[in-house]
Length: 96
Image (cartoon, rainbow, N blue to C red; front, side):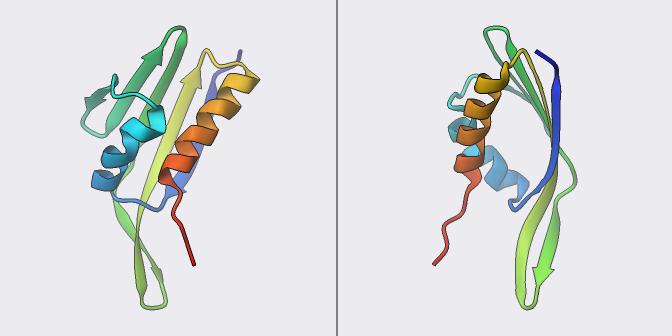
């Protein structure tokens, strides 16, 4: 089980990220230190670092944007896929 590092831009502000985090982790048992989150579950560990908050401008629409780095250890392939499905779904926005 190799460590995994995922870097991505998320379309959320820091406050929105922290509001949705319990849903994304399927738990409220995690530690926050500034803009870093550490979540441990058995032998699995997730560390999340939030970068500086910004804005993505699309024509007249301003969307919050935050760079995020997620480091994961102790996850086999299936556990990684399961975790990422729940995590990404928590931050998914509906459209119409």
